[in-house]
Image (cartoon, rainbow, N blue to C red; front, side, top):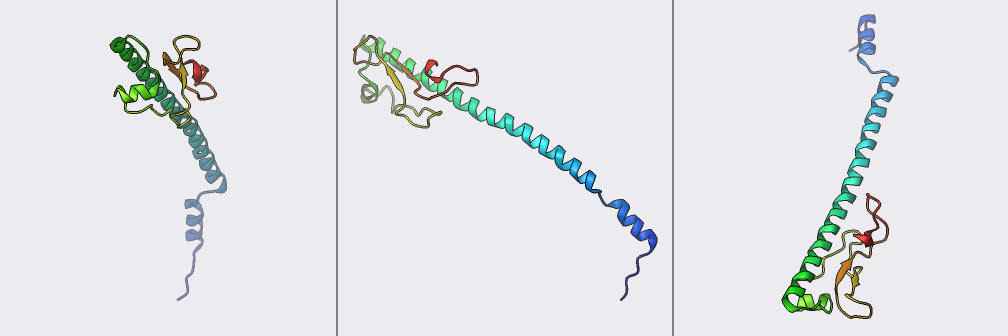
Length: 134
């Protein structure tokens, strides 16, 4: 069976196909949109980690304050908070992804208690605040 293309059918095929320029323009538009969304998604993940970090610090500070109200002294450390069931365990720092990088601040110099807690993560937030100052 011989297939014979008429001049009309060949022109119709060429008219319905995309040119290389049209394909390149579409690829450039899609690439630009992809890159724009990736930047927004990357920042939102970092912002979420920073929000969790701030909430964890706020929660531990509230627990320390509750312990102080109950016992009229600051806890000797996280172990005492866990022992007396104020917390189950020290939360994970979402920036370092570890729970042993926290900085324990004593109530006075050379005191062995837990007055405050800060993040031991290096770097700063999206607002350019060092993690250790949260």
